[in-house]
Length: 284
Image (cartoon, rainbow, N blue to C red; front, side, top):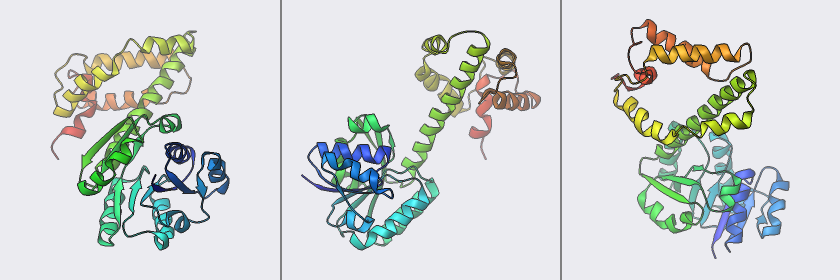
């Protein structure tokens, strides 16, 4: 048994609080919309009227909030009830620079703080699946490691640099959003070609995205643009894609085509199409 508080009980926060209560933890939760907390009562989660009331007596406080501004607002509201020994576990997706500044300020104020964003949706949170990243003081991480391990399928400690989990969370979300945008364009081409969307998605299974990241992605990171799929040929193919889609709206490929045109005009056409990343890896 342990005393845990959740500040933020939306889709993800509510799922994490539900899972904790089902594991036998004593859980108190607060949310700006009280109905969301009351719905967790069936699992034994106690509703609190204010952030300060929620954290009073808790040894671990989980923040699952919208953004940096809300984190600061809720932390300020909770301070009156915060125990000196409590550890704040912040799962919010936040700006790295503000995360680092927050961690530094809280440390100076004697508040224990770890930033622990996750890659998981509500179903994964209920079943301790997905990934949780942790950045902050190692001693704090070691103090809560076993507890956090119960919340996730994979727990990754990234080190004491306090903004590193925030940065990696944005990396991951960029990949998720970017892939979703390209999938939307694939479905647009499928519609234009009278191919069912389900069949189009099945065909994407032929492509090993992990291998692309490990191979092409690592070459990009190293600035190795030795051609295996020349930029000019890739641009030709994108032209075919855009022509296939016709005047239907597209999410990603028109912007990729425009960037390719810039690079070809700059003399990079014979390099690998991964030269799209050249400005990110050139020395400043």
